[in-house]
Amino acid sequence: MDKHIVITIARSYGSGGRTLGKLLAEELGIPCYDRELLKMASEKSGINEALFGKVDEQVKSSPFFRGKRKIYDGEVRLPDDPKYLSDENLFNIQAQVIKELAEKESCIIIGRAADFVLKDYDHVIKLFFYAPREESIKRVMSQNGGTEREIIEKIEKFDKLRYDYCKYHTGREWNDAKNYDFCLNTASMSYEKLIQVVKDYIATSTEE
Image (cartoon, rainbow, N blue to C red):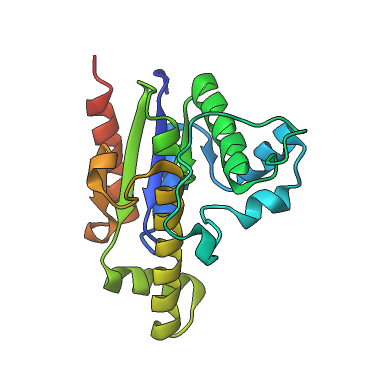
């Protein structure tokens, strides 16, 4: 890809958003970052990767955290700060990694509220992939198996985790279309056609 662009992908569970992100990255010839961000944040900070994993796209579920927000402001605490290992600072360190990637190269970043972290960057395209419940159930069942009841519970669990994570760190509604440049129902066509639709949108968006 000649132009420097960064694509952020938010996705509902079972929409195939992660798969689409990987396929799109291959098609465009650019890297895709998902859980790789946890390792990169760990290497940057010296904090055990497992701690980043514990707060990956989720916030604490204790009553103390319900309804609270710590909206990301870009600040990263120093190692001698008592809150260096806090959920907020772990998010901030990961956000710093996301910003460094966005400044350095064209890439795709999946989840981690990257659309908000990069909201002031001009060369960012923010995508949201979703699918109706019935389609999400079918996709999860084909990939992971399980009963319909188990899959529904999993979908509801992960979508709520992502919603709460977004609300806590950004103050935004995770599934609000206004936060994104382009929202796409992935049940409408094959992966191949979905990739082409997204590529066409990117081409149109980056025309000078």
